[in-house]
Length: 356
Image (cartoon, rainbow, N blue to C red; front, side, top):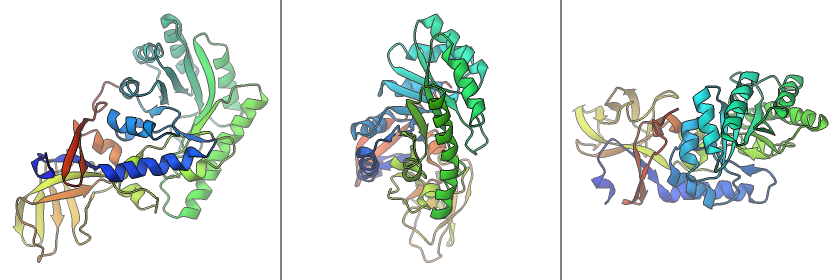
C-alpha cells in the first residue's frame, strides 16, 4: 500500500520524523533525575505509546480520562490520570484498573478523595493520588501552600488511597512565543509547585511524584528544583501551535485531502474540513506551500487560497498541518504510518471516542 492508495480525508504520520522526535525527547531525559511521563491524550494511539516507552526515560503514561487510561493500560502498567474524577462509576473503573497496574489520580477536593477511597476499598485495591495544584492556569487545582497540605493530610487517613505527591500544569505559559517570557512564566508557575512540595516534605507528607510540564516547557520545568516528572505529549507529532516555538521537534502529523474542486484560478477545495481537522487553535496550514492559505474549514471542505498560476489540479493530494493535534486525532479511527510514500502500518486511534 502506498500513499496514493489511502482514502481521504486521512490522518497520516511521517514515521521517521516521529521516531526522531521520540528519540530526541528520550535522550534529553536519559541523563536527568527528572523523567518523562508521555501524555497519551495527545495521540490516543497504543502503537505510538509503545514506541515512546521503548525509547526509554519514561516512568509511565499520563492520561486525561478514565477511558484513555483503560486503553493506555494495555501498553503501560503505570498510569497517571492527570485530571479529577469524582463520578462513582468512573472511580470504580479506576479501581478495576488498579488490580493490574499502578494507578494514580489527580485530586483537588474531599469529594474526590471520598469517591476514590470508597471505590478502592470496595475493590480491595490501592489507588495513588496526587494533590492537584493551581499554578496559574486557573482551571482545576487547590491553591498552593497550606490548602494543598490540608487536603493531602486528609488523604493520608483515607483507606484504599496512597498519597504520592503533587502535580500542576503550567498550561497558560507553555505556548508563549518569546522564549525569555515563556521561561520566566513557567518558572514562576513551577516555583509554586516546588514550594508546595517542600511544604509537603516539611510536614512529613510523601513527595514521590512532583509532576507537571508540557511540550512547550519540558526543558524549563525539568530544571526546577524538586520537579521529577514531565507530562509532555505533543512533541511526538507536533502542530502549528508548538511549531512556532522553535523547538527541536519536527512536524510529523498531517491530514491529507484530495482536491475536489478548483472553481477559480485563485482557489481550490479539498475534502478535509473540520470533521477531519480541528480549528480550535486556528486554521491549519498547507504542507510545503507557503503561498497557500486555508481561509475556511467547513464540515467536509477546506477552502484554500492559492496563486492563480499554481499547477494544482482536481485529483491532486494536499496535506494540512493541524494547529492542535489532540482533538484532530480524536476525529479519526486510524492513522496511516508512512515511510516515504510507503504505508508501513495502519494504527487504530484506540482511545478515540472512548467512554469517558
